[in-house]
Every structure is written in structure tokens, then in C-alpha cells.
Length: 451
Image (cartoon, rainbow, N blue to C red; front, side, top):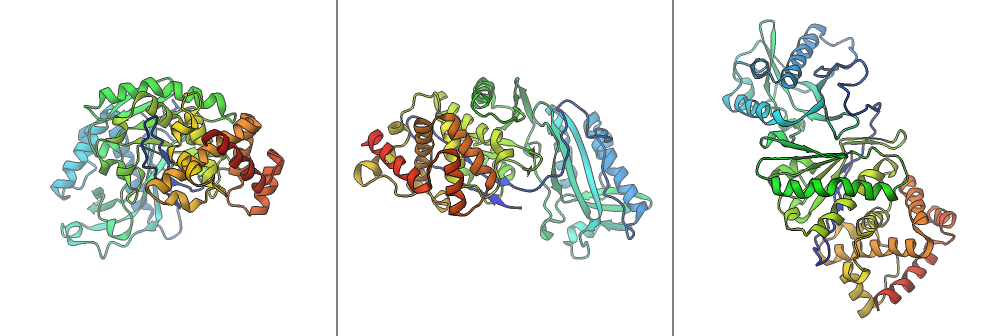
């Protein structure tokens, strides 16, 4: 599992451009499922899918905890709070019970196509070294198998996604209960926190997606829903490959919530929006858990024009994700997304790339393609890397045509990390030039456009 974080801090007068960030790039061996169905093949909504039994697994324990998770999922889907709370350990601490009660209440406004759990009884965490607060209450047995939450948001997810749960179960007599979802933190198995862990959720649907927010955010939600569908249409007009055309936008209430959704190490205070995905299988073109997570503060400061560019940039990443292999050059990914974001905006190169314009005027155009490490910098250096990438995409579109720009993206992004020789070969196939010739033409283009 690899996580990539790229931040762009510059907010220009014309537009603020967000970045592709926090992608979890993992093979996802799932089958596609149409939105609106109740679950995967043979799996009813609100069910748990145990892993294939193994010889050393305690089948009775596995069956009992599977049944517990089935009841928990069904209670949440059926909105049966009493049944939901009945799955909790009677000896669990009051704080955990209160948190679970709030979770049940907070999720009431979220429509799901699936909410279930996947139990892995052959992957078990050690409970002997857990902190006393999780083990001091009497029980006949404690068990901590690997559990994943499997869910799909109606109107947004074409296939379900899965997130890790750090569950500790306790047995009293013949009955099993959920005792904690934080006991395994010290062992690196942390329970994923969704928007419903941070407050009541409100879902607003459009033709092509949903906006998930919290009460009190309606003015910003209204702006988002006005732009969501036109942004999907604008991206789809340019991007030729089949994609779901479904978008889930999440508007958190706090930096802490945003960090929980995009990654604990991500500098959320520095971005306007982040495109994320839980799992990607490029071979089957299957992508699970794609989200556009918006900054709780930064996005509200954007003008309508700026917001439009940001959303089209991020949605471009969603549309192209199934065709983008990890290791692809960042200048390609971000430059193309910027190109789509700015397309038809009326923003000139000089207006949208002031740092690059200054570089060309005061020094000279870039002598090479932007390196990936430039996108891990900050401040004006990072801004310059994005502006260079956008200008390069504009150059290719202007000099060779949009179809060639798209073909270049698809060719290079499908290859991932390749040698310079292989990059030259692909560029010759698409544009008829090598990297050196591409840079030479780009430099001349920038001199004419910005000097």
C-alpha cells in the first residue's frame, strides 16, 4: 500500500488548483456492481462475508462472531437502534457505548447500497498485551480477528469499498459481543473513521453523484451541487474512456475529519481539495472508494470560477484513475488535470501561471520536464512545478491537438514508471518527437506566450 501526497498552496486571483493526493494504490480483485443493487452476487445487504474456513479456525467462534456482525449490520441498515446496541458488550466502557450510539444516529441520513462486514478468522491479533482498560472487565474469552467494513454509498459508489476495523470481541457464556474499536490501535490496526464518526450526515444527490456534508453547511453544499453535474459533463466531454460518471464529494467540518478521510500525515491545512481512492485494479479498470474530499475552510473562500476549476481538476483524476498506473510522471497527471480544469475557463496562461511567467521573463523557460520531487516541495517551488506542468499540457494541445494530448496521457499513464528510452519511444509514437524535442518546442511556446 502506497500513499502519495502532493500539495499546491498557491491561490491565484484567477483560480485555486487542488491536487491529486492520498491515493491508496492497491490491487482490488472485486467484481463490478451497479449502483442501486443491494449487494454483491449472493451477498444480501447487511451481511458479513467470512473468509474461507481454515483447519485451525474455531468454527463455532467464527460462526458466532459472524452472526454478531450480521446482526450489527442489519440493525444499522434497518435503523433498529436497540438491536444495534445489543451487539455491544454489556461490560464495555460507557464512552465506547456512547460513541456507538452517536454513530448509529449520525448515519441515519446516509443511503447505503451495502453495509456489511468481512471477517478473516485466520488473521488474528494478539490480545494478551492489550491495555488494561480493554481487558480488566471480566469475560470468558477475548478475540481480535481481522474485520473489514464493506459499504457502498447509494448514488455514488458503483462497487462497494472496504475499510479496516480494529474490533475486539468478548464472550460471555455462549454469546459474543463487540467490546471496543480502539483496542488494536497499538498493534497498528486502527478502525477507519468515516464522516458519520464526526457528526450527523446529510446527503444531497444530483444526477451524477452526491455531496455528503454535515448540518450547517447548506450554503456551501448548494454551490457544490450546482457545479457537480456540469463538471462531470465537462470532463466526460474530453475524456474518451469509459468511467462511472459517479462522484462522491465529502465536505468535512474540521481538519481532523479531513485528515481521517485522506490520511493522518497529509497536510490538510494546505489544500483546497483532495482526490482519493481506496483500491485500484488497472487490469480490470476497477476503482473502489473514490472520493473528492474538500477542505472545510479553504473551499469556502473560492470564487465560483475557482471552484469550477478545482472540481473539474479533481474529477479528471477520478475519470482517469482506472487508466493511470502508479509511478506515472507527475507532470503528466497534474498537468492534464489542470488542463481540463482550466479548459473553457477563459484564464490565460499568464493569469493562471504567474510564477512561470516571472521565470520566463526574468530568467529563461524550463530546460527539462518537471521532476516528481518538485511536487514534494512547498511554497513557490511547488506552485512553479504545477504551472510548468499545466503549460506543458497546453502546449501539447495547442501544437498537436487535444486528441494527441489525451493519447499522450493514456500512453504514458498506462506505462507507469519507465526508462527515459521507453518514454522517448512512446512520445515518438504519439507526437513524433523525443523528450528533448518536446522540451525544445515547449520552451519556444513559453517565450512567445509569456515574454
